[in-house]
Image (cartoon, rainbow over all chains, first blue to last red; front, side, top):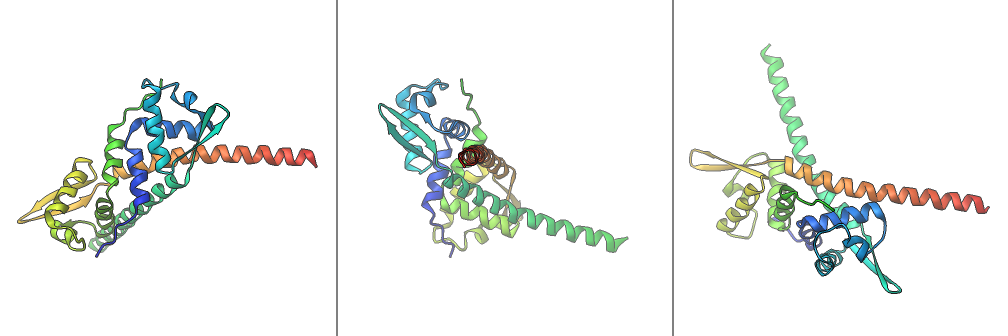
Length: 114
Length: 114
């Protein structure tokens, strides 16, 4: 039986579905911490919509928010991204290893036919 | 203004949210092509549920299905996984580069204080 329980990975991928949320993460990866209004600035959507995306990212453990006086500053938490990246790398590596084996078999067969 | 249109990436991440779909992809990465019933075998869910997951994976371009006589065989298409992996790697690399810069600044300050 295949065990398939990893809610944190599911939460990470669900958070990454939305392109605005990916853009928020990309900006936080480059710019260190940003206030919510700095973060919202380049987007065409309104501030409350950005706040909702930040809620999803915070719940998924991808962003942390801290109050500094009257402003809230956001930071990227990179650990869940690393975990998702490792899942993808592992899956791809199996596939590539299989491709390499297949290539070796075909090259061997080709060599024997000569 | 931030441009954020990449539907293929959104489709890939949406397909990866479900743990059963991730398990299907992991099996196809390891086992080359599998028939639908071979694929469904280790799961506790019924065949129609597996078929629905395969529909989502096919629509996202992650799996291809081919009829061989009376059986349908499934294969992994690795390109969208590679694209998702590269997005994550790029985002992480920005974050790590920023961390390295910060470490260098702190080490420099520490050196000057001595």
